[in-house]
Image (cartoon, rainbow, N blue to C red; front, side):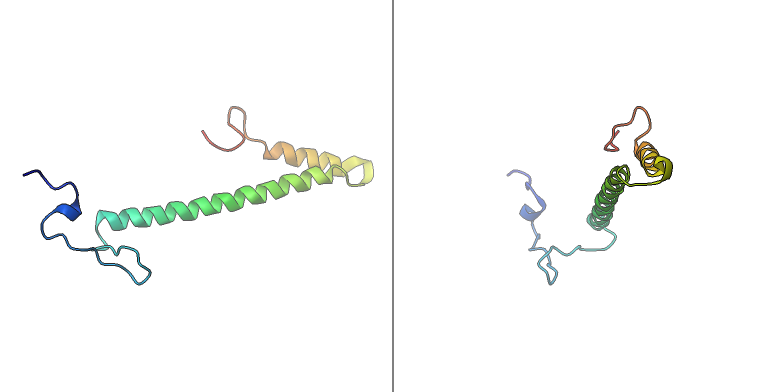
Length: 100
């Protein structure tokens, strides 16, 4: 007789409890699965924040590029646009997308 392949094959393993929306309910809020679930939720929330910030940065870059065409005394708008775009560039040695 071989060992059970998974938790569901083990003796006494019943069907997991499910929440109202059909997801598997954690057995105990202190179990490692609940911790992993919380961490995953945090990662997904951070990912959404990064996506929103990247979109905002894209809008700022587009505005700065458009500023170069604005009429201003002594070409100040173009100068400010160039300064903004230079400030938005990543430091030397880092890729533009922020990955390492």
